[in-house]
Image (cartoon, rainbow, N blue to C red):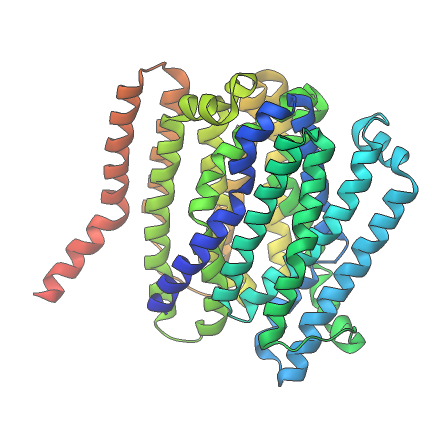
Length: 470
């Protein structure tokens, strides 16, 4: 399993890193062609898409993940995969029709005015294409087609980047041009994804009602859990928008884009672990493999958080420009939150035991932490308060996943050491927040922390292995 994991991490990692880094790659372009308020509108549209992609398809892709590998034959796998695809298309088609029919009302509901009605029409078309592309990408994961997924991710990233450069940069398309580039990229790459998925799971232009009912019976309760995950992950930005306005949301979103370097760099781990766990969780060696994989993941991830925090002022000026330069203050905290939010894949106990009620409860707890702290801290600390609230929600979810998951699928994690490493990283971030230092001091302290993290998480394991080898 570890060999397959390492192989899939490389394949998934390179392609997914590029796919997830499109927003980061485009940040210098968008920050110089959009105002902070317009960038805030783009962020609001992304938040709305994430919410719609959760609610409208009723998390049916999660059901495909659970049932696809256990289907009795190829026809069953085809029914699960393509029923989810067409159901998602129908739901987003209805949303697009609604927005195109009443764009001014939709603009008032989202932005408090009608000035973005035309942008919303374009966004509705883009969201439909993006939702279908997401289903196809997930299907390639569940069918264990990492090479095809890698090619599709690369194509999607290239299409999004090229379209934005041409429409926003060369043609001065502004916000409407950026949203148009997303629609062009999603719909342009979707046929390639469908063709790749059909290689292993023959294409079906229909919905199997029995398969759809079975999947929705499993996935519909997950919407509550998914809604909690959404609140935990995005409540900070909604509070920033409602309390501080679109300009501040734009700056905060720029900071999040820079912090997402952590997610980009570690995407291979997250995407590769879950399918392999579902395939191999019955094997006696899998828990030990998961433990080792998590410790290597955490060592790399926390070191990357430290690097982003140490160089945040320089990264903000380089990537976002003067209008967004203040976003550097939140980069480290958001990066740490992103890492903790993605750690749940190494604690699969609740998912394997199908304890969807427990998953929903822990996600509600994490969402409550984010919302409560965001409401309390944003008025006091502004953007920094929102970042701390996001981190608190992610830490709550991670702690509960590991604590509750052990009861159903025990993994020999050294949680005290992992927690100590996270606290060391948080202390480093607090030091940078409270003390102004020149770049050389920040870099030196960062190097020291990275060495200490490796010592805490990995070094003792080597010492234990040495006597056995001798």
